[in-house]
Amino acid sequence: TREYQAYHSLLGLVEKEEAEKQAKKEQEREVERERSGRVRVELLEGYKRENREWQEADSRRRAEEAAFLERQREEAMKRKRKAEEEEAKFDESIGGPFLPKIINPSVSCKN
Image (cartoon, rainbow, N blue to C red; front, side):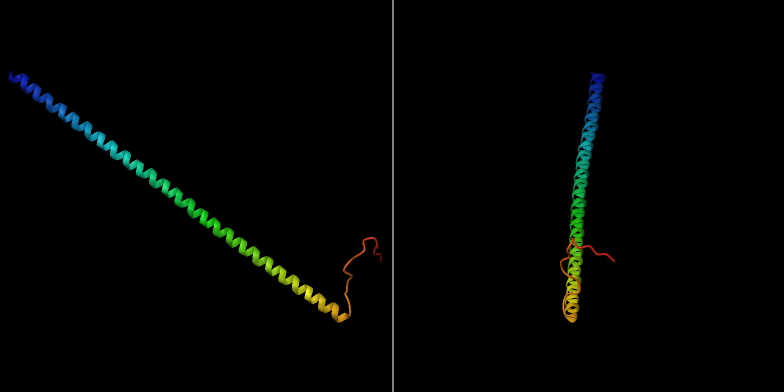
């Protein structure tokens, strides 16, 4: 009868409203999952980028350090060659080596 039809009509509206609420909640959950997935991907990409930048900076630092050590080695070699040349000039100016090249360890020096 009329009351029964009104009741079922009202019940249908309530069920429809509940279904719409559920669908909306599910859609919000899906949006949240997508957003959190994007956030995770963005974080991962950020970590990868930071790691790559750190590795590049570390490589540059190592290259600079190697270049510095190479310059130091070259300067030391130049100083050594210059000292050897000066020693050779001095030896030549006095007519022979100032100090013997081989020192006999069995001979002791006593003052």
